[in-house]
Amino acid sequence: MGDHAEVSFFGTLLRVILGALGPLLDWMIAHQSVVTIAFAVLLGVYALGRYQLGIIARNTEELVIRRFEEFVREESDISPEALYRRIYPEWAESVKKWAWFVPHRFDLWPVPANERTVKGKIGFSPEWISDVLSRHGSNVVPEAGVSEREDERQ
Image (cartoon, rainbow, N blue to C red; front, top):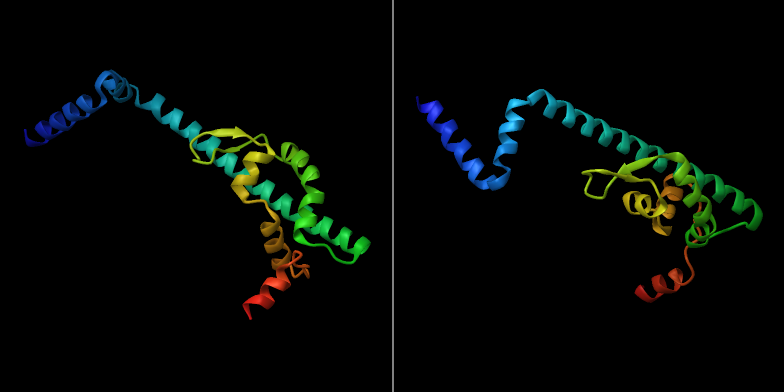
C-alpha cells in the first residue's frame, strides 16, 4: 500500500504541475513503445548531426592546411587573418556540400548546415586557423601589430 500511495501522490503532483498537459503524460505511459521509438529517432538524428559536424571540422582543418601550404608557396608567408579572408568563400560553399544538418547550438534539434551555424559550432575564425596550423607544425606569421604589442608588454 505504501508504494501505491507514493506513486499516486507523485503522479497527482506531476499532473498538477503539467496542468492541461496531464493527459499527455497518461498517453505517454500508455504508449511507451511509441515514445521509446520517437526518442530513439531523435537520438539517431542527434548522433548523425554530431558525426557530420566532425566531418566538417576535419575537412575544414584539411582545407586550411592545404590552402596554407599553397599560399606559402606563392607568397612565402601569410597571416591567419589573411588566410581566413581568402578561404572563407570556398569554405562557406564547401560546408553545404559536406553535411546536410548539424545540431543546433543548444543540441536539441537539427538545423541546416550553413556557414553561420557551423562557424559558431566549431569556432571557425583566424584564431582557430592559427591553432590548427600550430598543431600541425606550420610556421604562422602573426597578425600585423602583434609584435608591437608584445614589445610594449616587455
